[in-house]
Each structure stands twice: as structure tokens, then as C-alpha cells.
Length: 369
Image (cartoon, rainbow, N blue to C red; front, side):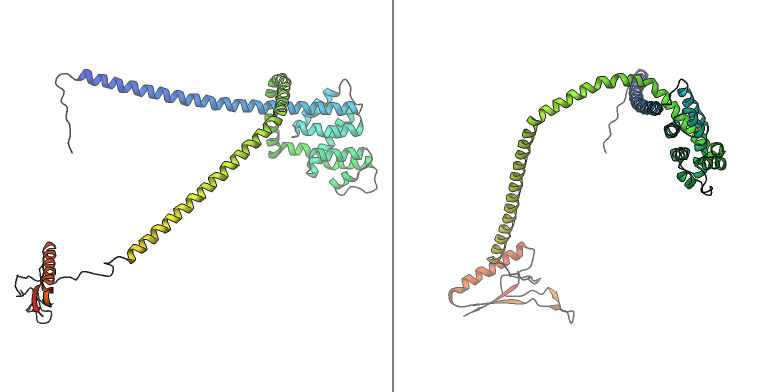
């Protein structure tokens, strides 16, 4: 490893200070940018949550207003609307919340009772019995109020199903009175329980959300009427454009299908071509292998012998049986007629190859014919 050492002669304190300042500034810039990014992200997230919360609160306030309008309509239809009916309803809702019933549950119950009695005062009086019966029978307030309203109208069957043991054959008024006596105090008892207090706390939070949402409700009331014509105009525009767009979309879809079919066809051809080329190359390899003149021929391992130009053999090996040095074998070349020249050429070639390979040329014996 080669290292490089730079020696600074003289006073290097200014340089060190400058480098330190640069490092500090860079770190400060990075920290500032990082902190700003985190703050922006946090603000964006908080803004998103705030918008969502406001939208949910506004929606809850709108639903509460719709429930109020629905009950007022039922009171008007029953002929029970008076100068004090609204105050009576609000007082009944507040009392119901103290007994762990939501304003929505109280309004649903009052709607049935007002429709059956035609009087808000009577309906709010029966509401207390319906609340006790609901807790006693462990049913929702709407079911209990419906049973009380039917008993008030002379049909006590549903009420006797909710409270077993009531006297059969009694008048509906007596059945209602007996049911109210048996269930008396059940709503207050539930409201004082741990479950009831949790329900009251949850309802208080819901009421707070509705109150906050009611602040933004006028804004929603102003925006929605302005948006409706825009949405209608957009719908009309889309309706007008669809007859033109649909054929174009169909043409585009058809063109895409054609392109896809062509692509699939080309891919199929290429796959077949690659497969054919692979098979052809394999067949060519098999053919070349079959006509190879050297196929099946292995060069003999020449013995470790040293040979001269004559016919004498030099001993190099050790006998496997006695451990004595064994004489190297002699290759005898038999010639007939003029073929000796060819045979000598073969022998010379073998010697040359052996020397090139670092081996020892075997001794050669000659016999002419």
C-alpha cells in the first residue's frame, strides 16, 4: 500500500480553523434542511388530519341536524307541534343523555311515541318508562319505545314479550303500568355503572364533535349548492362526449388487440426459430462426431525409455517382482521391399514427438523382408 504524506510548513492554525468552519457550516446547513423537511412533513400530516377531522365533525353535525328536522316533521304530522314542543324535546334529550342514551336514540324513541300519542308531553312522559324497560330487557331504546307506543294504543303483546310474567288478559294500560313498575330505576342504575359512565363520556365527545362541526356546517351549506351545478354540467359534458369517445375507445382497443396478436405471433415465430436452430446445431454436432477419423483412437503411453540412434535399449524401469532394473522393451519394425523408408519416417516422427513431449524415445529394432 502506497501512502501520501503532505507536510505543511509554517502556521496551519488558520487552515485548520477554516476547515472547521466549513464543516460546521455544512453540518448546520444539513441539520437546518433536515429539520425543515421534518417540520414541513409534520405540518402537512397535521393539516391532513385536521381536514379529515373537520370533515368528520361537519358530517356528524349535518346528520344531527337531519335527525332534528325528521323529528320536527313527525311532531308536525302528528299535530303535536306547540310553542313549547321544541323545548320539551331538548329537555328530554338532555335527560336521556344523563341516563346514558344518545340524542339520536332519544329522537328515534320520541318519534314513535309522538306518532302513537299525538302529544309531545305524553310522549316525553312515556319516554322515561321506555328507557327503564330498555335497560331491564336489554334491548335498544327504539324497540322498547315501539312496544310502549303499541301498549299505549291498546296492543300490549310486544311489551309482554319484553317483560315476562306480566298478567295475561289485563288491559293494555294496566300492562304498561305494571311493566313501568317492574323496570323502574333500571336506566339510572345503568347510567351509574362503569359501562354507563363510559357510554356517557363517549356521547359527550360526540356532542363536542357535532358542536365544532356545526361551526363549519354553514360553509358546507354554501359550498355544496355552488358545486351541484358544476357537477351537473360536468355530467352533461361527459354525457355529450361519450357517444364520440366510445367509438374511439373501441377503435383503440381493436388496434391494441391487433398489435397484441402480431406480437404474440412474432414471439411464436422467434421461439420456433430458436428451437430449430438449436436442433440443427445439435444434428451438425452429431454428424461431425460421426465422421471424425480420430474418434475412438487413443495415443499409447510411451514407456519411460531412453533410446539412441541404434537398436540398443537403455534400462530405466524397476522390475515389479524382483526390484531389479528391467530392460526397456524394443519396438520391432518389420519391412518388406521399399516400405522401409516409410517405416523409418514413422519412427523418426515418433521420436520427434516424444522429445517434444519430454518423454524418452523407445529402442527400435529393424527386420527387413
